[in-house]
View 1 (cartoon, rainbow over the protein chains, first blue to last red):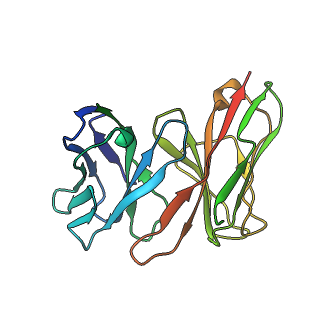
View 2: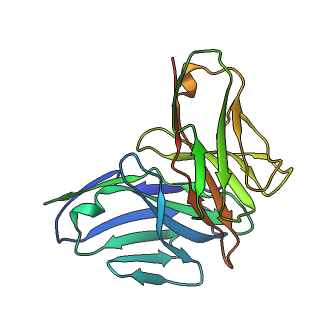
Length: 112
Length: 114
């Protein structure tokens, strides 16, 4: 099955600076890679996703990059704001499989 | 408004009690899932369903059971709760999209077994 590793487990960033979270996956048949943000006491919410036929995707301050050869993908948040503080989860799904495999999460803290 | 509704949101029960966590979605999705998550920790898939009368076990072994008699309803049952079942349970659903399903989560049910 798929195995997803996520780093770092905690990350503190000065407000206005950029934050980068990295994930690696094990199965080269994976083709869908979403990122979820979970604020304290709330449900995980999809913030961006990327499919294996694309190398990069941007949505305002958030971007995701995918390197299929190296089997890793990263979340980039620019111009960080206090409301970006949350736990972020990456995930991967093998083509044709209904199950998402999640990373272990990164607790991001934005320092005002 | 289209959403995924879970009840109860918070529950404290005694060891040995039977509990059913309810999940209903008005998203019009075929696929539904149950995840277990300790606070701020990894999400573990415990059950999923492709549609009515379909149920499958997830990656994390669970003593719970599920049923899918109606498309919009996917309840999870614990026949005899134990303290080790204390956790948050997140119901989710997904729609088909080319290249991969997008999964949406409910607000969660926090279960404490004493």
